[in-house]
Length: 353
Image (cartoon, rainbow, N blue to C red; front, side, top):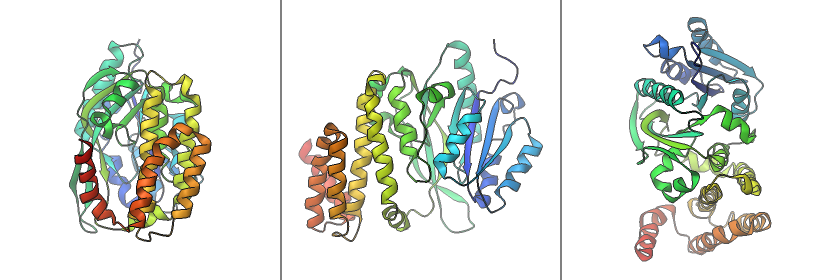
């Protein structure tokens, strides 16, 4: 029996010094239908901010005390904020929305109705719901964001198991991300996942590991999440990534370790875990050997890294080692990322087909 104002959807908002963005995000959850607004549960997880993020969030708590909450904690990083938020959420389902992003308010209304209606119709509705999202670019400082790229899934409906999702991986691809996924709260807690703390890229753990256990996956092809990507022409993202190699490798090793529990994955979950994890590893190798302009810098490190994968999981090693050898050859040819993306990948696609 459904109780009045039962929380259907929780939103965890990891927040660290996001004052200049936070108001835009928090205001996007205000629905003009109190019956829907009151079944939202929004937690701002203040990860040790030193700006006025808390003061901004408190205004919403004061105005909507049954909807907004603040959880204060010492700084521990994005994963730490999600871990703490999961402990206290009240919604049957939950989503993570970063503090510098926001949601489409109209789609939020539709999403809440979708979850509410299906929960009433089906016992133990979805373990996960995959959605589309939109990304925006900030053209100039102190200007509005403009649409940059739509990340749409091309499937709808369900339930699907993990095997079906893997077989149609690129139809679901954008939904299989932090920006696209909504998890059933009890399902997620039952996986026992604790995200890596104090590192970047732990969102890969969030989107890959629980999905391997999911037995009931639905696709809802609406774009709820609005992702602010900043200036897409800047090179800072590559430079920052190259400063965080330890973060990549810690997350990758945790993803590989998760495969030790494959006997408990759902039908097709092992292959979905394998394909998503190997893709992330290949992206890392490409970053270090192709996108990195200093072609000699990371050759030894990548050789050691791949040998560590061999010790952890021989099947994963056999898969990524093929691409590693190609990347090494292209690296020694000093192939640029631009040439790789615009010519080599296209040529490879033609040869394979």
